[in-house]
Image 1 (cartoon, rainbow, N blue to C red):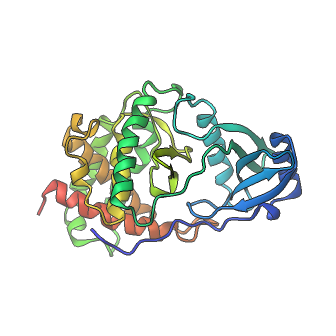
Image 2 (image 1 turned 180 degrees about the vertical axis):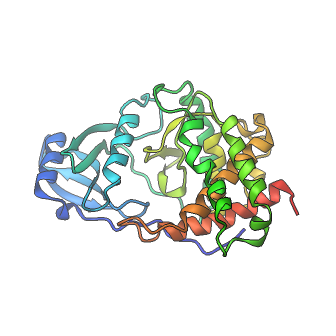
Length: 316
């Protein structure tokens, strides 16, 4: 399942490059002027990510984006703020201190209590196992869903799970031969996932190495804009999509898995098929502003997830 990997990277501005009014708005949330900022890289975002130190000695983590960088990203940040503001205190999620929103620019200010780092790239087996176990604890902590008015999984995932139907309606010439041969079956399988993904857990739905921070033995989960209410096993399955992308065999992590073991294997395969179709369809679209590597990342994830789906279906 190995394949060349793409580093998650948006074209991020530095703190000093934000409009003065946005910096002032963030400082209002902080309650003191920023005297130092360490800009962070990594992750698929065109926005600022910075650890800041204030004149009063306090510290925070700030992420900010505006419509000039990407017209869709401010709405994504608003969605994240609406979720993380309602997280239970015991959830391994950095605390949201406040937001600045002027209509064009949105900034989220988090308490900097996490002195963590992203996992090694590629995933190391010990770190992957620690995060796999932590995702189980995360699902248990977030069930029942602390944000009960979120969309159910069957609504939130509908677009992704129907992407194979989009591809089947006008098959691209460069489809994998096995994929082309089974395109209609894959479309039906992916759509069937919508009948089995609802539940009462708060689902992150974007668990990858760059959305995880390791702080000693503790695992933190960041970047929640795509969250919805669904089956507790979904995040465990989608994390293993990222494991496959990094060259790990995901199947051993399923053996006796506390959440996935209780799900019908075909339902899990249906979800994986839906994500494969999503990666395949979106990789063929133009790159969004400020995210030059996203489509190539999706193209590579399509290849590694397709190989996993082919293995799980056993179709010739």
